[in-house]
Image (cartoon, rainbow, N blue to C red):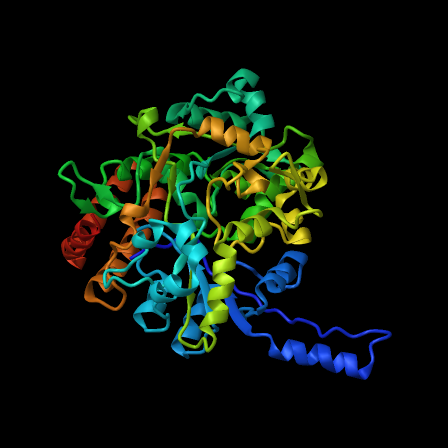
Length: 528
């Protein structure tokens, strides 16, 4: 069974009926009758926000498949919407949710599958999914559940060596504090070096633009991989004997807590680190008073646009690697990626036209679908030159300046429901916007975080099934760990942090962590 990676959102679409000057009543009626005859598929997507499925790429998808697509917009938080739809059995024809990996219980798509809300896909793929079969290949076998069935497909699947997590540091200020040579070097910073840099920043810039400066802040939703990666921590701890344990038992977990505790005690860590939400976190970064944060380089895209306008071209967050005490460069674990993908897409048992749903999925999975959704329309957004695809300069330049704005304005790279990593048959990358011409922040991420890839797929699906006693144990273990983490980081002394950590392990033993790990090991061995 597969894991989980990022949160859930949704959207709604209204396709307008064509009307206008010169259309007779008979012609208007013909258009309406034609629309009435088109199959309609409803879709819930966890990441489309309030977008409408009416940009030129969305319209072209519908034109080429002959299927009208209506999007469902969440009225609550996306994850809450997905849960409510499942509880009420009031879900659309297709649901798109997270494929996350880690030690939290329950992928939403698995909950749908276990509730009988997703149809079995393997038979339909064999009869109506030739492009799905050819593009996914062996990944289809990896997507089979323990019962042998395929309940959902994935997006952004296949090996991807693109760097994920890192410490994002203000380049202009780093040049001031460490010199340009060090700021431009790909050599990883040591824990001692980065701590000294945070102190230097705090001393030189107690305030910026009349507000207190923040040496280091992060948003808990997207920072975990960076902090884990610094100390070589993955999703679970694997012993020398190959046994799986919860991450809290890893020898490096306490040093990570002590590092954060030191920063907190020296007022180098944002005092609001625990309660930072996405909006307030972004506002802090855009304000210009933050020196370092944690996350993926692309998380900084919109931030960097604002900083460049406000402070100049070098005021950019770039990715750097930091080595925890005792960790060598080859032992970090920043760039864990699931070769199975990021998102899950499944057809529900409410779908009355599986053939139409499969037609959409098969088209999006095809090479034609890849290049439409990721490059745009031939002759408008790209051209064939000497047998190779070449994007229009204005499109490529626009993506380099502001990827999010260009995506929203063009529809290119917006509907990534069945995206595959890698290159197409002509050798051009599917993901034109980020792979054909690297932005400066991407180039530095590739340089500074290289050689740190590891596949998270082996850990996918080893958490206990939802609704079991072991799943309840895991929830309690997670709650104990989160509470202890907060207390340890905010402790007044390192000795107090160590005591809190020891108490945490004892509490986990009482909660039944041994039984949880037994189940995880059984499921882990069954995957091999």
